[in-house]
Amino acid sequence: MQNKEVAALRDAYARHFPIGAAVSPETLDRHPDLIARQFSSLTAENVMKFEEIHPAEGAYRFEPADKIVKFAEDHRMKLRGHTLVWHNQTPDWVFEGADRSLLIQRLEEHIATVVGRYKGKIHAWDVVNEAITDQGSEPLRDTQWLKIIGKDYISLAFHLARKTDPDAVLFYNDYNTENREKRQKIFNLVKELKESGTPIDAVGLQGHWSVEGPPVEEIENSIVQFASLGVKVQITELDLSFYRENDDEIRYTEPPQELLESQAKRYREIFEMFLRHKDAVTGVTFWGVTDDGSWLNHFPVRHRKNWPLLFDENGEPKSAFRGIVSASESVRK
Ligand code: GLA
Image (cartoon, rainbow, N blue to C red):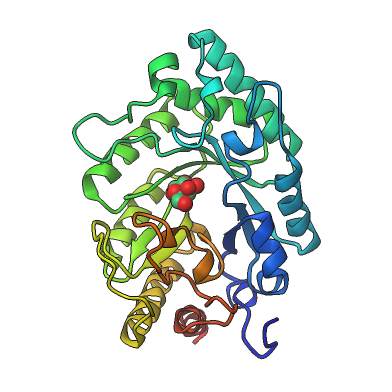
């Protein structure tokens, strides 16, 4: 239970943009007061992914997702839907025995059912996640969606989502958007989609960054570049790891104070930049609530502790939290 004297992010950012967190039903049970007080938006960390919500043909499992929807409604929070089309966490049955027309039919049914169920409750959907490759000249990632349907699977998914919920804000979502080559490939894709009349409204920068990088200017360049296409931008999965991207060592078993402070400073700088671009930035979501619940304790190294978020394992605010609150205060002056 959090001290009421601690500021609330959702209030500090009320005039700017919603502040969200990715949650599971279990996180809601563990930290209901903290989440309700601090955040104004939620994303389902896993339970709306294809394998969770639609594990077998004709079989949907809505209960865990419904629980998150209800929590958001009860606490007047926005809700982001994550995610409809992805190469990961999609069950094998989806592709089994499918030619182009059968896979389109399955996709159509999935989108109509899931987006339809939460119409008017989920205000934004990550329609396609991570369709662009990290390396090489190939723009599109080699996935079953691409192999079986062809490259128009992306625009098809957007059209299906728009048809089911004309009011939902539709996103393309990806990581490493600060890497210039990848950013350019994503930019080209979004531009092409817009030019061909695909209903895409926004780009999600996942924001799995670290205490050391990427430089704030590269993040800023991404926001500016995507916004130039007339789409909105959200940071959809923010965390700042204590480790650089390719570091597999275990360096800390407890968080060093100076790193906690650098993390706070960096969060502050990043949020000051977001605030300068708040015409384009319509939301920032953290990928988790407390450090012990972060996926980064298991990835890329299993059982390696990491402290990427704003609250410690007791739900107490870290310096990182204060860095973000002070960024919001600096705007008021
Ligand atoms: C990607 C996905 C998320 C999540 C994270 C890691 O960024 O979009 O759904 O799986 O990886 O947890």
